Amino acid sequence: MEKIDRVAIIGVGLIGGSLGLALKKAGFASEIIGIGRNRESLEKACELGAVDWVTTDTSAGVKHVDIVVVATPISVIFEIIPKISPLLPSRCIVTDVGSTKQKIVEEMDLLPINFVGGHPISGSEKRGIDAAREDLFLDATVVLTPTRKTDRHALQVIISLWENIGSHVLEMDPKEHDLLLAITSHLPHIAASSLVEIVSTCKHKDVPLLLGKGFKDTTRIAESDPILWRDICLSNKEVIVKVLSKYREIIANFEQLIARGDKEQLTEGFSRAKKWREKIDEIFIS
Amino acid sequence: MEKIDRVAIIGVGLIGGSLGLALKKAGFASEIIGIGRNRESLEKACELGAVDWVTTDTSAGVKHVDIVVVATPISVIFEIIPKISPLLPSRCIVTDVGSTKQKIVEEMDLLPINFVGGHPISGSEKRGIDAAREDLFLDATVVLTPTRKTDRHALQVIISLWENIGSHVLEMDPKEHDLLLAITSHLPHIAASSLVEIVSTCKHKDVPLLLGKGFKDTTRIAESDPILWRDICLSNKEVIVKVLSKYREIIANFEQLIARGDKEQLTEGFSRAKKWREKIDEIFIS
Image (cartoon, each protein chain N blue to C red):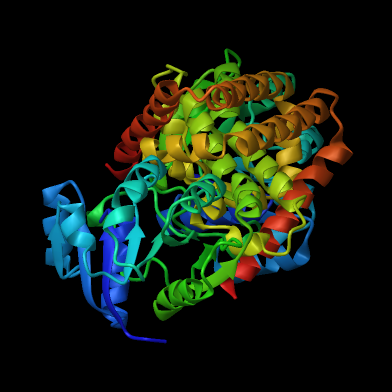
């Protein structure tokens, strides 16, 4: 594969900043350019060595680059890529890190650009360049969602970008990605936020003293960026609505088992969850 | 307060074993006796220094003790305390560590014993003596639920037991305890188990690769002991059923906001949860 000279990262927050740090460390490109609106974040990204130089002028930033990675909330991906599309060098590859894929990929496939949809399964409830870490994507799964329109060479370049920084690339149909992530990621976020909601409406003064480690771990992700999650929910809404409804059914089933005092089924339900969850632990530890 | 000579702990698992370790370290009693059915756990508790001697013979174990702590699943608390009641020395105090309180306290108040209901808000998804830690209750809240029948001196002794090992005692009405814990602990457990249930029914081979740190933290507590949780659910069922139904309403509300694409309310909902969750983090860090 040819040498990559310049990579522009639009949005130097947790994901963009971490990607910059990892790409610099791996020596993937000779120059990494940080593009954003917030001068302070851009300067911080420079100081940390996540990027070589920065600009708030998107058109100046994407000139002469080989790859543009858009690492912004999903609503900004929809705004910014059509805007930069006419400014890009002809062989430039555009990729993103959005947590939903079908709508993004559909829309980007209509533009005259070389697009590869991407989603690193890695993150944190923290946000912003201050939370960036060069190992955020090490051993993480990165889903890429090529379509019939996707250029095979562009796909190979983006695979190599992630593999260079230690991620495991998984190719998947965008629709399938959105269905699976609704279950593994979007649902848990809403479930955790709803747990916080119900506890926060309980005004008893001692509530904070009654929150154990279980509650804290279970709801940690409710601290994530609201705008990011609003965009995720709205760009995968049909699927998420179905998954939430299924989740309510499972909760209602527990409710019925408890109400009728069904010892056996209740033990069976908790045991099944325990067993499956332990299996997953093993996969992750290995 | 008079010196405590002997404490018997019935059930030397995670909670009983950790309590033994902490009481030994604090020098709270001159002798700690471990009582249980599983010889292997009892021997391990001895080896670890959580107890001074052990027996599978409950009546031998509780002879001449000042305090009996019952650290078993709730269904065993209901079985064992009435059984040992006639065997106890006259001034002996009985306490428990059950995660629900109203039904336990009601039943124990009918017995001719000196009972103080207790619940340390501390635990782990792990179980058994191997997971025991002498600092499990350090800085943890321990709720005690005295009733009109509770002897004031007995209450003081149990307060001093927990304070000696660094716990913060909170006195609370048993009914109030069960209502609040249904929200802060019982609900999160069922929510997490239901998340695991929905993911486990999804048979796509790549699912394990798509589970990020968010999913893992959110569902960690689903690994807890199924029998323990069956007992908790059944001994607080009226309240838990109501709380689960309220939780389904909150999920249904998110569903509606997403279905109708209500950007503003969705941002507001996630922001409210984020803000409250961050406030809780501060309380815990301090």
